[in-house]
Amino acid sequence: NKDFIFPTSENKNEERILDIADGAELELFCHGSERYQKKTYLKLKGVPKKQKSAKLTCDSGAFYNGDTKVKVEKATCNRRQEPRLIRSQEECSPLGADGRSKDLDDLWL
Image 1 (cartoon, rainbow, N blue to C red):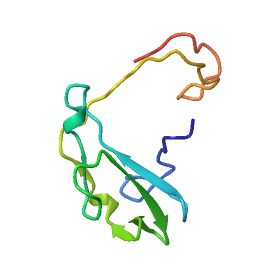
Image 2: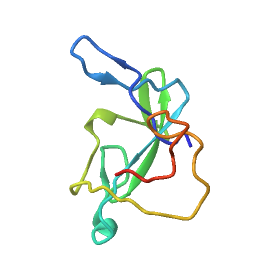
Image 3: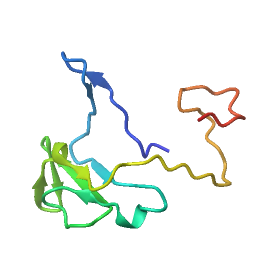
């Protein structure tokens, strides 16, 4: 569904790099287990306190929350992040996360 972005390159230190186009939006989202979801929020200077997420816009290599420039590298969450898998009844993608287009009948975790 193209909601997730993945590294497209590596630098000389073998760190994976995300390329965000100028004008593109990046949403940071903090999530926890169902038990702690209401108490989990994003911590980032320039973003109002206790928000679960923030939509940032890339402009000339910098990120902005509205008119406020933020340092996306400093973003963190107030709690430990926990995987949250939710099954729902909907039409599945014709392409697997690993690029497969066959043998998609089973859910692998």
